[in-house]
Structure formats: structure tokens, C-alpha cells
Length: 360
Image (cartoon, rainbow, N blue to C red; front, side):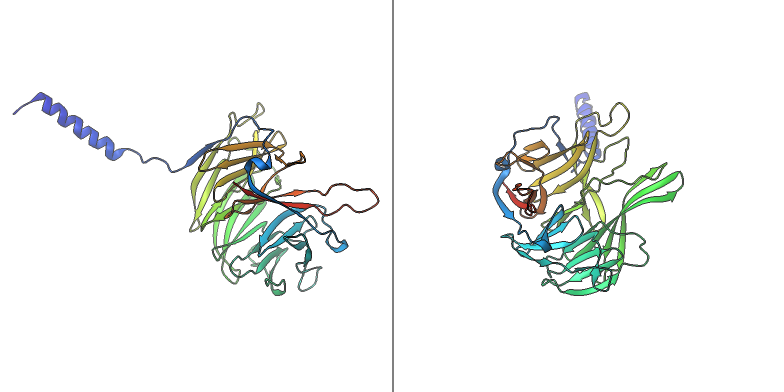
């Protein structure tokens, strides 16, 4: 039977099926909006489930002026401080000793560019110049070896994740066609610390040699067997690198995009935001970034969708502001460094206080 309505229905059904088959799958990329205004009244108590203050013991052989990074393992705090020495304290703040010896001879190091603790074995790794130092959980030197001779640069990041060893290098001023390249690369090592895989992370071409840093090396965050990576670009570009990637089998997959308020460039064509890090913990995404030379931190709770944007940090009970850095991604545990209260000019100031903040 030649029914025009039937023919119309059939054509519509065919086209409907065609569009259904060719419809693009929805993106799995998570988009997170960064507020345009800071909240100056957010306190640590607003975001914390618990806060622990640890006054580090003050001793002549363990005086700390400025802390670069803090690591936590087996109820011990490993304090990497300004002069590149690693000092160890317990969770009561008692000084337990220094890791290794400083010097130029065998079994000694002058400075540290990267460190990591193997959560499985408890062994500690230091990248010190062209050497890799490996220590036992009891802080005894197990091995000292040279970095792979094919690598003529150092590493400013090293982590052991699920038994795999990853290092990140920042290479500046490589001569290329059109100028100079600043490059970031991810390296995977075997158990003997030989390079077995390489993944380029960034390649920025400039007319002049320019090297700069934002003071953070929180490149990889990891929990529950998942690894996330963000490496900053500290030179000017005409676009914003605002995406956190998930690392799977030495491949990067876009995971979360931070939508910063536009415009991203000022009237002179310079970036308004210099993103220092984007890290993922069990329940939060945290980012430090600079806007007009001011340090901001954005803290976003993934499940509730609630975010906090603060300038210079979160308020403590004394009215001081502190920026939070990840200590244990698995536990949503962050830390901050609080200088000890000034007593008098007649004696050395006390060592700083380490604040441990477990988020709600």
C-alpha cells in the first residue's frame, strides 16, 4: 500500500538511526570552573577534618631556615630544606638525624635535585648531581651510582609509583631551528635505574634563552593506583595550559580542565595566570597559580562540586595564612609550614612548625 505518511515515517526513522549512529560520544573530560573572586575568609577549620601542629626540634645540627618539600613515610617527616640537606623528624617533632652525609667524596652528596621514598620497600632515593643515592629504611647507604651517561642533565622530580620509577627533567635552551627549546620529559627507569622509556611532555620554542621556575615540583599526584600529571610552563604563551592528564602506560589522557576566568591574556599579550601545579588527591583537585605576582590556591571537592579560591592561603586560628601542599594523596592529607613565633634577637629562632591538615 502506497501510504505517504508511512513513507514519511520510514524516512524519518532512517535519518534518526543515521544520526544516532554518527553522534559523537560525550567527552569524559571533567571541566571545573575557577571562581573569578577570591574568598578572604576561608579558614583551615572550614575545610579540615583535623589539624595537627608539629613543632620541629631546634638543634644546632638541625636548624632549618627554609623548607623546599616535606615527605611522610612510616611516621617520619623527611624535611628537604633550602641548603639541600634532608633532615628526619618523628611526628612529635623530635630530630632523628640527617639522611646521608654532605660532601664531595664517595657516599656523600653536595646538593639534592629530587628525592623519593618507595612505599613498598621503604628505601629512599636521592638524585644528587650526577649521582643516585639509595638508602635503606634505616637510613644506611645501600648504593651510589652514576646517572645514565646518555643523560647530560639532572632531574628535579622523581617518584616510585606502584613499583615503577619515574623521573622528570627540565631542559632549557636546547638549540633548535627558529631559536631555543625548553623541554620537559618523563622518563621511566628499571630496577637498576636505567632509562627504559621516554615521553615528551612539553616543547616550547623561544627566540632567546629563558629559564624560570615557579617554585613547585608537584608534577605527579597518585592514589588508588591512578597517576595524574601536570607540568607547568613558566614562559609566556598565547594560550593557557590548564589541563590535568591521567598517565596510563606512558600515555597521557586529558582528565580535568580548569576553566580560568577570561581573558587569559592581558592588554600586552602576556598570560594573566601562571599555573604552578594541578594535583589530584582521593577527593580533591588542588592548584597553585600566580596572578599579577600574587599566589592563589584553588581547592575543589570533586563529589560536592564545592571550590575555594584563596589568596596567600587559608587562615589559621592566629589569623596567619598558609598555602597547602599534598603530603598523602590517598588520605587527602596536606601540609603547611609555619615559622616559629619570634622570641628575642638574643637567640636563634626556633625551627618552624609543620601543620598536617586532613581535609573533610
